[in-house]
Picture (cartoon, rainbow, N blue to C red):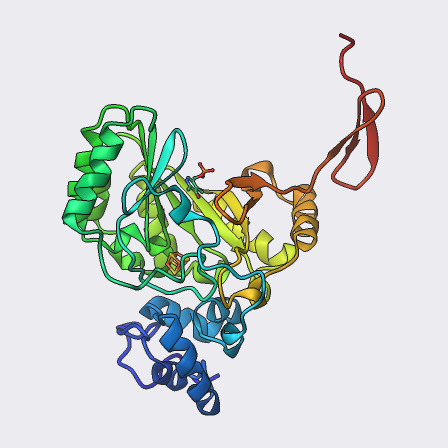
Length: 358
Ligand SMILES: *Cc1c(COP(=O)(O)O)cnc(C)c1O
Ligand code: SF4
């Protein structure tokens, strides 16, 4: 591969270009796409937006595991019978625009449809990248709904990516949520600390800390995404006392091996990020080439169980298509027997367990 982004001005230390990649010709210049592939990929990019931050542009030039997540592929033009326009059923549970209320105690607030990068497997790919931020009147209506629904204990900011908003706007939103007494926890789902680490500024951290219990769930799928800048950004957040979790998507050709996930989860736990969820890949349109089978995912999780400490193991979950919720999908370690249970140990051996007599 040619040196990263030879055509563009690069940072002082020469490690990344100063501009995001937003067109197929940028990717041709970076050596991430061949010139003869460009015409078909232009069609893909018309359907689903393309954007790589400077950091991910450079990381893609170094790592296929990163590049496959962001560089369009002709396989995206293939629609499979199981593909769905709203794979996780966001729309089925929207009491007001911009809000998803599926579980009684928590809501998802979609503050923007914009992201710093566009992932080729995104489960919200039909909506991300459309028009910018939730308009002020809709945001007000969403906050009013939260304020008049005392069962809501937690508000999850997502998008798109909530951290594309300016520190000032985030500060305003966090302060308004902090003023609602029953909102005990504020959670942000974001890819920004990894893909656009320069956005994690002291001003942003101050803005977040206006709520006493802010948790950040970082979306990251491959250890090669965790550049020196990303590691520094995660460290700034952890040092500020913000609890960090991660969510990853199991992706064929990116991280569908015990070795790749071991590297990722070990790197995260060292950075004080607790791996939370490993998502089975959703049924987004044109993303079938990224999907593994559930049996493959379970085999990877069983291999990791003996290898990694419990703190580094996420739960492997499926968002049941149609909006029926997220559930752990194994592997299972117990099966019911006539008297008690058969339990499988990390080496695959079976043991009998007896319940107390009742
Ligand atoms: C994933 C999800 C949540 C958060 O679920 P947790 O299991 O608490 O992380 C909340 N609402 C919706 C609609 C979701 O899809
Ligand atoms: S950052 Fe998240 S919401 Fe945005 S494209 Fe990637 S997966 Fe989708």
